[in-house]
Image (cartoon, rainbow, N blue to C red; front, top):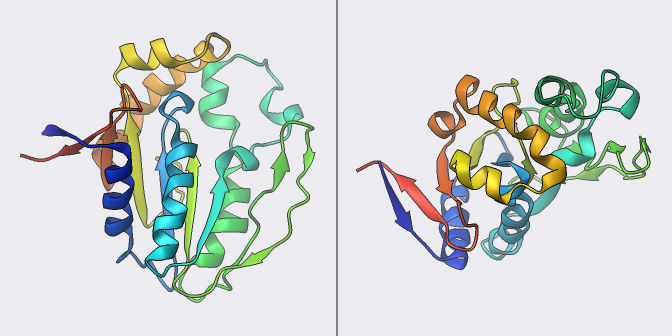
Length: 209
């Protein structure tokens, strides 16, 4: 394996070209997976316009809008990395409201946000109907190994040292969860494409030699 340095803008264009032919059914369900320090939300946002210019309608969704209520995810504490790994994401809600409607024969009717964790109540988002050929681009952390049916996954990889340095102090309690994720889910092996982002300003595509 080798890491090919690439500019952020060229990375977005290359990923858009790779995503364009993806059609799991009439739609494509694309995940940008990475710890917050890797900025998966920024890359997911950057993919929207290039995909639209190339003729695909795009709906942006964030796993952060599909967290479980605080009474459930924080029941045994606010800084338990094992609970963060297993219990924070409402996997069933994400499948039901976003991914299952885009299965073959699905309705294309997607709810882009389910729960507003900032105020701990249901989000006030309305359903959106994604036309055939459309793409959902979803960002989040620890997305693989959960049975989420994605059609294409971009994994943003950071070395343990870089991840620790770039994780803000208030989130460093999450670091053991990311180590567990790397060991158990092996996202760098199962993702469709891996991007090294020890410094997100200077990414590198990881490729087989």
